[in-house]
Image 1 (cartoon, rainbow, N blue to C red):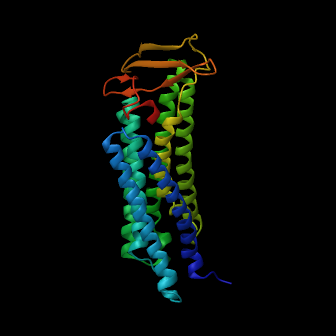
Image 2: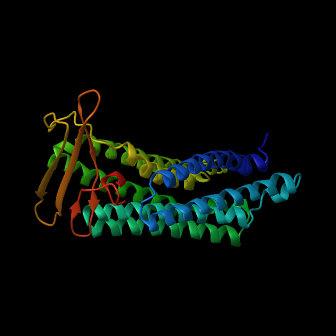
Image 3: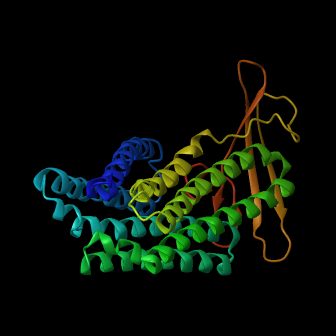
Length: 323
């Protein structure tokens, strides 16, 4: 028995929309946590988060509008199930724009850490290819809103998802490589750096895997199964960004590894080192306080300037806890 039109397109779309809304609920909790915890972060970063949150909300609204119109308003109209509308088409460019904005944020992080313009430009270029592909898919669907033509958008969809995968991969490799070097330069920071490396890899791998599965399903399966993975993709990007920002509060140096100072009631140490070549000067400030268990406790923060990295305060949003 042949599958109905709704089973081919609207069924996978509905499943993807369900996951999308669930992830939006998670995103709402993360945005609330961010604004109640990191009140001193820079204004542009807060503005970016608000814009992404509103864009994700609009994405949910137009997706609900499309599926309601297809399955409720035009119930029983089989011909309508074979055609897209503006809401379905707009979802592609919204996903590309949100993903591109998050990738540009991570590109900024890479620049702050490494000052490597070549890597940053590679990320930006892949991100722009990502957005261009999603915009091309939206225009093509808007001009030819017949779902039978959806498999013919191979060029646009491949640009969109391959650009996203490449950008995510470069971001993860660049951050892991740069932070990995600091494990040897500053052994006392190993615990903090290891936590940053873990969340960097986890967030980058998640979006990469979903994008690869999305592209594989699109290229190999003629039905709309890929929509299950494509619809929630924008929420994955914003959730990954917010989770990395909100995780900063949990990143603390516990002093249990090498380089632990001797006991004392309240004490502060300063370590300064100059890296070779073009590497910036680094100042580390570690405070330790004796708790009730008679063991020293430490907290570590840093501030990244334009030509120097000065680690001296929690109040600035450009900290190692943001990486």
